[in-house]
Image (cartoon, rainbow, N blue to C red; front, top):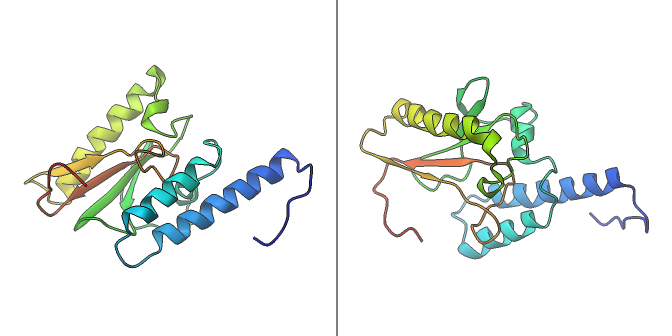
Length: 168
């Protein structure tokens, strides 16, 4: 911050600036103690959309164990951990360990069908592990209008309370 980029920055410095900007926005967005307002969710989504989709995300740092997370499930393909800003008594994020161009569900290709199925099956396993026999909700936000704030495909597993329809 406060540093002006050179007139002709090299691509790696642009990537570092973009990555740093995204991490700052996400850290500020995710570290709020009170429930975020719709405006802050939208602001975070719009800020994240401005960063190249192949840039490293906070989830990459969690996968690499550079940032701690409360991990509830892990196998060779999927990592599941508690959201630091839960929207329900149980709020777990499930992410593929290898991004492989899958920054959002709209970027899915036929080659991603196995990991997409594995993510959904893992969500079922984690829901059972968490005691959500009465039901749960799975949410995938996609793109700025879908309020996606981290461009690494992830599934929100929400439960532990009665869900409403339609969602807000």
